[in-house]
Image 1: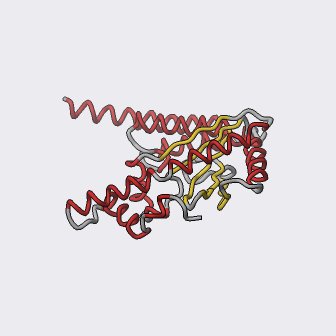
Image 2 (image 1 turned 90 degrees about the horizontal axis):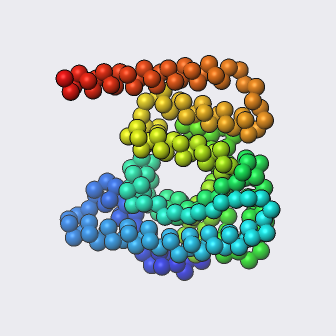
Image 3 (image 1 turned 45 degrees about the vertical axis):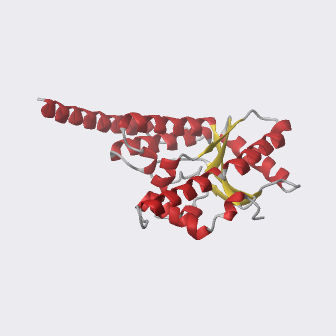
Length: 246
């Protein structure tokens, strides 16, 4: 199915463009300019299959019984470069340059809507489901990120679909906004351990609530301890700032 314009760029050249921008590996200024053009073209070539897939999913869900919200995004260039550095992978290995997101009311609705889409996609869909990764029960890592990730393929291009409940999306938005204020990318485990632990525990509690298991031992005391640790760190930072200004 290699009919997309992106396939006109060789895989080797695409990966070299990733190395040029993420690792500063290039011959000279002319080589860098050419490789940056390859990088930009490769990123841009995700937009058409992404938009077509998002619209197709919307049509599939036209008679779906549960409320949902769907959006799409093309990963920004700085974020792609940062991910290449963080994961030490090749550019062609990234599967989320083009991504869609579906938000549904509850965690159970995540399974319902995915099953609905999966069945629909078996009958003449323009995309195929390649891989499913469920981060909901245990969380993706130490931060507590939760979502169902589906890797799709359209015209030789990999795309990512994330399906979340509202409370999972609220958690993701909260940690992203806190990261902006705090100055560290918390979802990637950057920053103070107390802050990361706070969000991980918050995610765990949210999941227990959605699962109907709300009688976990002493979540309030655990939050109190985490809050205390974060307040202590903030006071220490303010004290250091005051000494520097003085």
